[in-house]
Length: 154
Image (tube, rainbow, N blue to C red; front, side, top):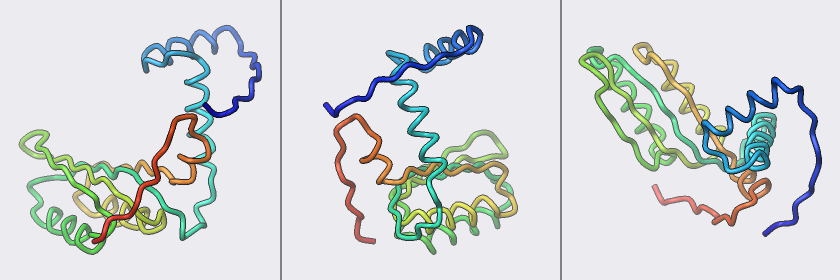
C-alpha cells in the first residue's frame, strides 16, 4: 500500500451533512475514499490539455435521432475516420425516436477530444459527453494497483 499523508479538514455542519448523504448514496466506504476520488477528479480536470502526446482512455456517450438517417451515417464516418481510437462501441434503442451509443476510446487525448467534438457537434446528436481519463493520472494519483494499458493495433 502506498504511503498516505494524513490531514484534517473542517466543514460547516450543513456541508458535512450533505457530503455524508452524498457519499452514502454513492456507496463510499469512508469519507477518505470519497475525498481521494474528488481530489483525483479535480486534479484531472485542471491538468493542462495542451499535451498532445498524453495517453488517455475514456467513454464517449451520445444520444441521437434515429429517424435522421444521415446522422447515423455521419457518426459511422467519424468512427471510421478514428478507428484507431475506438476500442468498442455499443448501441441501444432508447425509444422509437432515439438511440444511445457508447464508444470506449483509447489513444492520444488530443485525438480523442477531436473525435468527441466531431461526433457531439453533428446535427442530429441530441446529447453527448466525453469522460476522459489521462493515463498518467491513473498511475500518479491512484492508491490501487494499476496495470499499464498497451495500445492495440488498429
